[in-house]
Length: 284
Image (cartoon, rainbow, N blue to C red; front, side, top):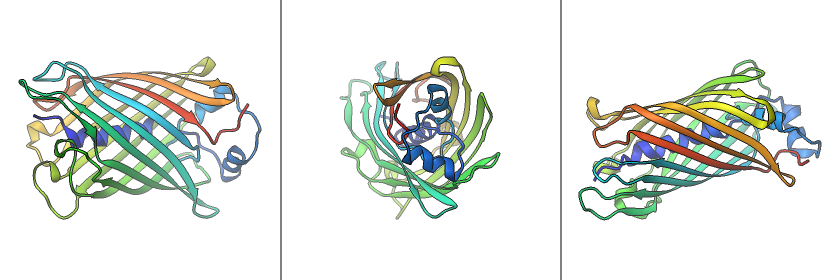
């Protein structure tokens, strides 16, 4: 049974980095965000979700669903609990950490039983300047930890590799690119041999009353496969809204994608639903 474990995991990580974007703020402004109770409008908070390396703390719940999965006709699900947590390094730089713990549901093919359990935990670390210029950047490692509960749902070896991002914000729109590649440590074969690449382009356009249009499409490649089975290229986008529940800022978003390139047993369609709670933003 082929469930594209490695590609799915890297796609989840990159989708997180696009979805939890925050704004370009200076070091002084970032301190204000975390240390005062000055209220922010919904429109301002929408912009706070448009730069992957700002200092906004978040807890997220995400569902990635692939309906009509080949050889089964059922829906493959990748559900994850995610945390974004920044740390100050010094007056000039911060470290932004992303931690993703995924839960996989892989439908069985040709009468086989389905498999459900934890996948491998992905951690992305980005060092980025606190004082933002016109072009925002971040660099660091991507780390895959073997936390799978079933051999079919991930690797039994840690993986490590580089990650980098560029982000260009404007008043109503923003664009960016996040790239990374991870290799398993200590060799391995089959599912335990990880060599996966991800590139996600980011586009957002802000609308009134907390609404936004965006396309955060993740392109993945499994370098251990043949060239005809290697790539997944989704095209699509969605809509999101940021609002307050009491004094807590909440973001809800939905995207849909069609894979114009996909492996033989890969999904043709996918949908992404995300609920994010923003904790470091000033409360109303």
